[in-house]
Image (cartoon, rainbow, N blue to C red; front, top):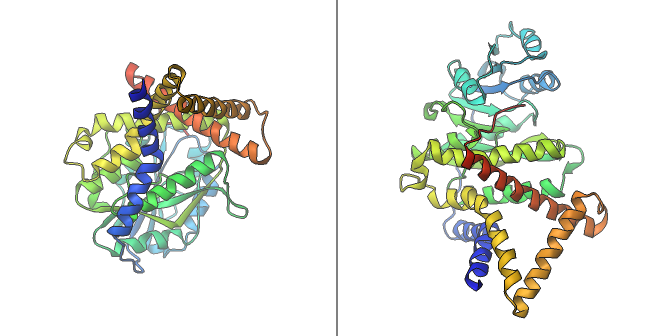
Length: 374
């Protein structure tokens, strides 16, 4: 049981602390800066939408108002079988020379929509975005500065959870996302990032390959293909898009299940990511796959603590039970304010994320597919 306890502890500690520590040391000893310079290449902004009538008009204005020469910025929007007013909104822009609209009557998923969009792109750089998030006006220029470095093939922007006026939230999912972004900064400082921010990322058009139908994580699949072709994927924290930190508990949880399910799918779609053909193999395993293992390591740690009688393990058991107790209080909305409330919120987020990983594993085992939706 001791081996189980310490093995599980090691997996958890490395996933959340050790990997970041290794990246920090790597960035200090062997930094790999990006050579940035002002760039104004032709750009195609690509977006696939489905039933986005509530946010689509606002998003299109956001894209049209970006600080970039209009003649060099094409916008390609694909409607994936929308059944609300999405197509009516898009028809209002059919005569805009900057915009190309594709209206698919059948829903075939985001990956198929992106493949359709890529048939119409004209820019040297293709920028991917989603309908809900708002991009800061100067973000596109900042993103493109990184392509002055010929080694860079893909650039990820930064997703901010919160309000542009009030700033980014520090609670729950917001805190988790801040930690995630710090890891991405360390990955970029020492090489390549594993994946991009789906709300805002850019790729050299010549490096793009078609997406397999049903691909869940285009923002990981495409960057991995870029790395495989010998180019870097970097993170640009100054190029920002904003989103709500809380879309509702059920929706947030379902989205996380879908994302984690996508990690299993990636291994199926690209078996080479677990071989020496993957230049970022250690990073991929550490950043993406070990997080799928953590919930089982947590269970092993708790069960082994119940069996072991030494004071150290008794203390570990008490701390674990206290942590999960805080999470339950937060989920039951019995703790909201103060330091204890914030700690409970973090605990609840941690528990929900790992519960989502268990459900993603169950989906993988039974072959249940996670569908793309708005």
